[in-house]
Image (cartoon, rainbow, N blue to C red; front, side, top):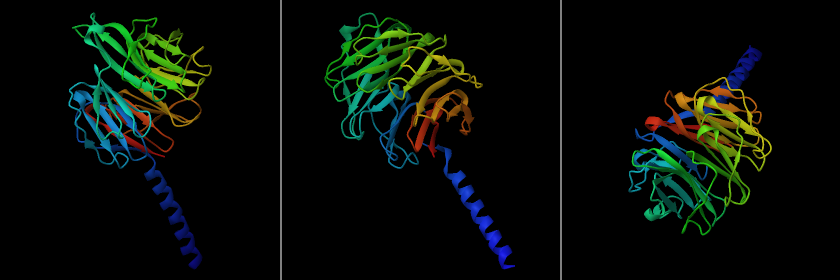
Length: 323
């Protein structure tokens, strides 16, 4: 009797901890109490993070996403990206505006990135921003006419921490969506019609790379100077192991458009997109499997670290991930 009780007790413990482990990992839906479409997300630590989206909606969390607190940004421009250079210094682009924080996101101040006289043919709309160090940064986007039609691409560069910006001439007029930098020198931009641009001189000059795909590429993520990924329309995933000199299309059985991709380490990466799609790779991006998100709406933003992650999307959808 004692042996049978002991055996049952041990089995029960094994099942309990196994179920507990499963319960503590995966994607969990959160509630930021907004119905605005959310496009941007960034975490400066496991607990401290920010989400942003339509009509200037901005909120922060100090508990890993369990609760969110709205931040007054005093703009109705749609927030397209949030980026922090370190725990204190952050940037966000919202339509034609850029905001900077120097106190970890507690307060945000608008900064002038251009003068109206600089662009007589259209209005800038910014989609992505990166700083490679304290002084050097790149902001990208497009010029739109009065009917909100794309008439030119736009790359702006600063060498003084964002106090002044100069336009960089690039070999395309396509709409630009996303930017990534590795270190101080190497950067990549992706855009409409399979566009990939690369720089090796901190963004002073850009050249076109052959992506081999016709669909729009909405996001790019590089692990180092050689290994990178881009995702886009119709479930498009491409990867490179030589800095983009050659891009290889990855077979993907899931056709939903992908809007963001991010890797936690050299092997493990995630991509998110339309219809609640979350894809996972554990073999350096060679193959991807679908994960359950519990969300049917589209995802637009993604942030991944080694132990946690967060995806945001339409109608205020937020899901967080724990490994």
